[in-house]
Structure formats: structure tokens, C-alpha cells
Length: 273
Image 1 (cartoon, rainbow, N blue to C red):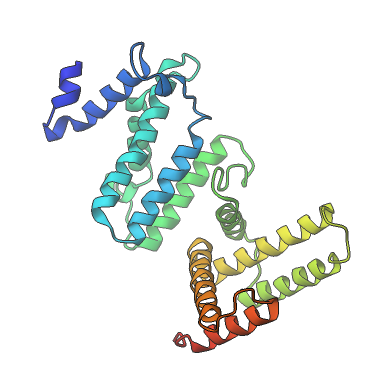
Image 2 (image 1 turned 90 degrees about the vertical axis):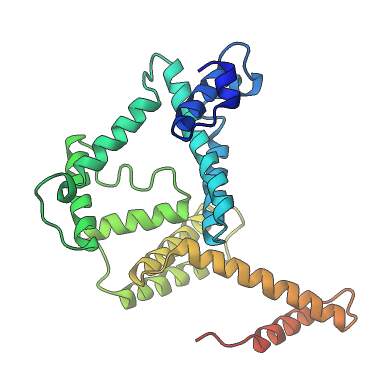
């Protein structure tokens, strides 16, 4: 595509070709100085941010915004593929990325592209994991080597515990995990007398968080969604607390006054069923 095609092409079926060409143009001499100086590492924050903005649009059911955010995620894919194409050591482009994806989808859906018989979604997931596990064994890597790599650590913990559970290393039920949670809480309490910055405090708090996420898995609760709801609830109650104190003309509330107002806000909320 030339510059005129990139600027004015409106043919729907050529838009992916257009996006690939624009990304290439931005990185070549005479293109955009900012785009040209980026590296895989420098745009990691962009990829993370765009993924979260896409998730936010889905949760808000803002479909026109979702279309835009999916485009921003696609931009990151095109960006990384273009940089890989420029580097002889990496030696792949967006078409190689698409081929790798297509080959994987065909390979991991033998019930669609082969003669395997799978009747429900759970069976599909089991078969997917079996095929994935075989592929990983062929790579000769430890079982948890790449579990959740790149994810935020709370979601990585979920992946790690789920993978270990599939190999038989797990508490028998949620009550067993809850017992472990109490044990970890006791160990955290033992560290409270230690100096700030003590490595054991960090270690024990990490164990507590990991166990709490493991309990989420047992109860089929998404920790990301649960924490998001907890954050929103805290923000709502905090603002209501401030509004209540303002109504009472308390300009510099003490910790006790804030606690009382917080409890009143909490008591006035409708009970969840």
C-alpha cells in the first residue's frame, strides 16, 4: 500500500492489510520518531493498559468503546510483530503470528478439525489441557515453569494453584483451605512485633494472599472480580462516610468519628441476598 491507500482506503476487507501497512510505515525512515524508537520492553505498559481498558469496556457493556479498545489491543500486536520482523534474531512477522495461532487452534480442537468426539464445554477444556500438557512435555520444561507468566501476580497465583491441583496437589475442599488460611493468619500475627522491612513479614503476608486466592479457586470465585467489587464497595462507603461527616459539619474528623460514620453507612446499606 502507498500513503494514499493508507489514508483513504475504505474497503472493509482490506482494513487489516491497511493497519499492517500503516504500522510498517510508522517504523520506517521518514515515519514517526516516537514509534521508530520503541522496543518490545518500552511498550509493555501500553499493552497492559490497553488490555485493562478493553476489559473495562466489556464490563461496562460499552460496545462502541469496546470496538475502539480492541483496536488498541490489535495495535500492540501489530507493533510487536513489526519490531520482530525488523530484527533478524527474532525473524517473524504478523503473518507468522497468525499462522502459529491458526495451527494451535486446529491442533487443540480435534473435535472440530479431527475425529475426536467431545460433547460438552468441560470436555473441551479437559482435552485442551491434555494437548497443552503434551506440548509442554515435548519442550522438557518443569510443570509450573510458565504458569501464568506475565499476569498480575494475584492472577498468576490462581493459575499456579490450579495447575498444581490438576496434578493432585490440593486441599480436599474449601474448608481445608480455610484452615490453612487461619494458619497463615496466625503466622502473620507472629510477625507483627518484628521490625518494618523484615523479610519474614513480607513472606508471611505473601503466603496469606496466596492461600486466600487458592480459597477463591475452590469456591469458583474470580479473585480479580472479587477484588474489583471490594474496591468499588470501599470507594462507595468512603465517599458516603465523608458526605455523612460533612452533613454533621465535622470538618476535621477523628479516627473514632470516621469509624462511627463508616459503621452507620454500612448499617444503612441494603442487605445483599
